[in-house]
View: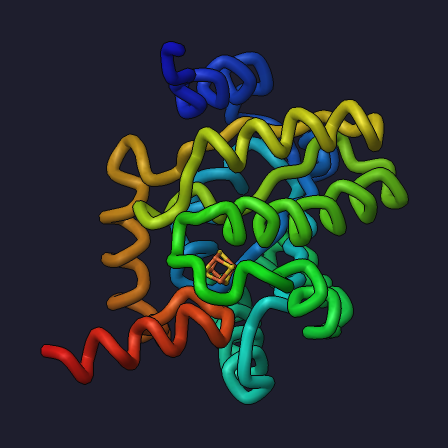
Amino acid sequence: MNKINYQKELDKITGQIGENLFEEQKPHLFLHACCAPCSSYVLEYLTRYFHITLFYYNPNITPETEYQKRIHELQRFIREAGYEEKGQVVFMEGDYDPTCFFDMAKGMEDLPERSIRCYHCYELRMREAAKKATELHADYFTTTLSISPHKNAQWINEIGERLAEEYGVRHLPSDFKKKGGYLRSIALSEEYHLYRQDYCGCVFSKKAAENMKHND
Ligand code: SF4
């Protein structure tokens, strides 16, 4: 089966919206965010077209100190980059309940990153975003996750399309790593001195990263 280029799909939508709208004329995007480095480029890119609610919902992250570190870094970034002041981005935190992640991951603890456990982890977080986007009557929802070269953009978009049908809210297609997006996120992370974590988020990815360091 041919892979869909989701960046091109996004280009079609942003092309229709156009760049010169006043903030109050922009469509409302409900954007799930995993961390500051991934959000840096995505916000720089999408605030040109959308008014954004940035939704930090990541019950997968262990330990809680790491969860707090990532959220504080994200809040610092949107403040220092001026998005809040300009009224372009509103920040929202979801519930932090790691039990729902561990229940989801039962029986898949030993699987590696990019396995089916990750598919369900994307869905867990995107489902909450779709649900909240519907409650807020947002025009679109999506996630920053596709910027990472470690994440499967085809899965992310398939999940997004399915949830869009289920919740009755449009999914914004994405493959943010394309068009130099990933490199730009690294440059912005350096510019704002953002904390860049060395594991994806869950305890299983933390252990795998530690084992890799140990074996180096
Ligand atoms: S490796 Fe990352 S995407 Fe996969 S289950 Fe863990 S936190 Fe979720």
